[in-house]
Image (cartoon, rainbow, N blue to C red; front, top):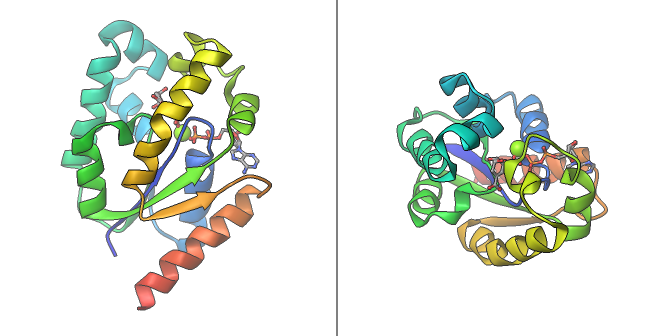
Length: 170
Ligand SMILES: Nc1ncnc2c1ncn2[C@@H]1O[C@H](COP(=O)(O)OP(=O)(O)O)[C@@H](O)[C@H]1O
Ligand SMILES: O=C(O)C1=C[C@@H](OP(=O)(O)O)[C@@H](O)[C@H](O)C1
Ligand SMILES: [Mg+2]
């Protein structure tokens, strides 16, 4: 078993589930946004403002490329699965779980959050268009699709943990 990647739109629960999964499985957890923020000494909004979105995307790809070979949980940022190169790295180096949430749930969770520059610069309609545009690419990248609607963070975590343990024991 190599890495476990969590992908999906902003607010689908990647960071929150990743942390829980790490506790349940006793496996290290890395949140790509946190790792990139730590490396640059800047927040995600500061990176977007100072260097622009494209440079941030390059930092994401760089992270995936260089990251050490270990069994760990990685919560990706919502844009990571948009690059073919990133999708290829994730599928080759690990198991990819897509957290699938309704746009309604997503909007409720992220609309007031100041730490997501894409939400800050978008109207509700624009974000919903982006959600529909990205969805097929999340599904294309994933080994597993995880429905999150009506499920608690713990239920989602237990489901993913079960799948990982099952595959490990195969
Ligand atoms: N299934 C869920 N049930 C309850 N709260 C959730 C669920 N999924 C996500 N959240 C909450 O929504 C917010 C955004 O989740 P987060 O893990 O940061 O999403 P992501 O990393 O995918 O952008 C957090 O406060 C998180 O606790
Ligand atoms: O979807 C995106 O393009 C982004 C998602 C964010 O991560 P979360 O998905 O954890 O919110 C973060 O990487 C950045 O704000 C850009
Ligand atoms: Mg996150």
